[in-house]
Image (cartoon, rainbow, N blue to C red; front, side, top):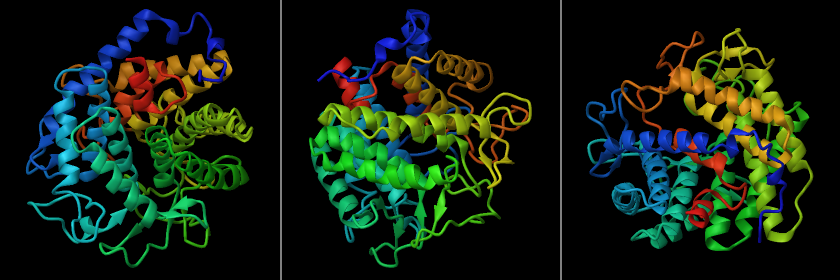
Length: 421
């Protein structure tokens, strides 16, 4: 079934229709893929420094391994040399040393060949990315991919999905005891992405409807009630934790306050979910579009150029005042992806303006033409910074932003790439 959305409404003058712009996106994406190839370790993938070399005593990180597997598997679908072998290495690492053979599930990483006590904790954020990577590996027809997908979905469904709440639980001890008293918007946001991929790859719509339930609670109920300022931190009774991590404002996964980059990331996920539901049955809740528009507007208003300098900042407090003014690269990448999605969905030229503005900012401030890759973070003055993110470990956000704008809103990322390439 063709995508049942008015993509033809994109203005003829849009960069999305420009052949030179498409070539530019392709070139930037290839640069990012080549830069990150150095992150391969024997048991997975590790972090790179700003020069593109493995950091001293680099250790395999499982979230990074899952993201690299997803990215290079998608690149392999496109026929880009070297990527298939890297993705296959990721699959084997996830099937082997990074997996908890005793209790099932996955360690957060390894330190000198063994997981530390902290690394043995089972995190939903990580397992969402493993499920995403497994689904992409199946699309790429990688050895062991079907086995990894079966293991990942079984663990994720059994231990993390809460049918009663319609969301994913957050974390457990190594043996699945002692569930954390926490419900997090961040891990559920990435779970929505993974669920849509699983629905396309497994042909099981239950995953798509789990994505809808999670989005409905976190966005249509909770965020809408706070004027679309997405609150991140709740306890298991759904009490908002307004002061959560107040003493750790630069935490890389659960910072204090609100994250405007997540407002816009949710924005494009809602449009992709709407498109996926339309493909499935021809109907989708109207709030997916209206909430998406509201989230983008709120995210830009809360985060863009709050100190008079361009860039979308990291966090704001509960009064929507700047908390951490540093500009992470992923925030800009998700904002431009949302602008492109809204442009394709609505045809409104203001989203074209934002799409161009965000790419201009990334091009002039974040693309590192000397060392390669993107600077992962800038400070409030748009100078290189490493307060939140050190080095250049992340390929996932930046690389997807060079390809997603050219894809339909549905099916999901790897399945859409397979259909087009």
